[in-house]
Image 1 (tube, one colour):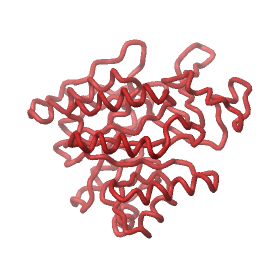
Image 2 (cartoon, helix red, strand yellow):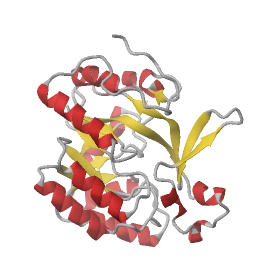
Image 3 (cartoon, one colour):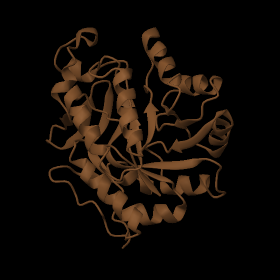
Image 4 (cartoon, helix red, strand yellow):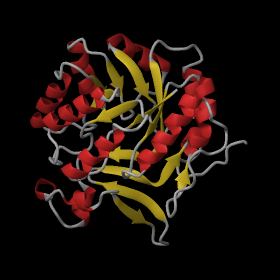
Length: 296
């Protein structure tokens, strides 16, 4: 099993993004997903910038995958999607069924992202015939579901989201702009002021959700590090981390080193994060925000 790094979900400055990926190049993380997947109005980095980052990471012996938008709303976004498909060198993570179709037409192998509704083996096998060589399990599915799907080892690789705030939904509306009484078309890229999203609490001041532009995330942070050993035994190929800051690269690098050295145990590798609730309920077939205690 290998460690992968999800595309950045948050709106950071170009300088911060470049610093982040320069640090990534020095780690033992195997696979890096690059690209804007949330909102096309986040224009700090262009496709040319991501291509330059991809070249730098490829030179550092990383497997690079270019990730596409999860929600295509305009002709300009479709045009940009085609440019990603036509990059000529790197795999694509298709996060929208339109990206699947374009990759198939271009005879380009692709990774099927977690925002595509893959809920049965028949769908996965169909997409494999279209060119899918890896799929990322949708966030809300469970270990029991995955075990049934991969009872007979599939011809494609399997990736599971193991750490980070869970993307729960995408909307045509921008809730961050709405919260600040701004129109989406004139949002001033206000989400850059919230590099970890905007926390939403209940009336009892309990963390509930995290607003990230048009994306809604879980307030709790999924932590499946204690399940790495069983995932290895199940035959899962990739364990994905979604970074909230550059500091999370230390976590990913430590996990990659442990995997390389075969020093994993069933004990939790990642401690609970201060002031942020952990969750793992979906993996156990329960409410996503729950924290289930794995067997020692």
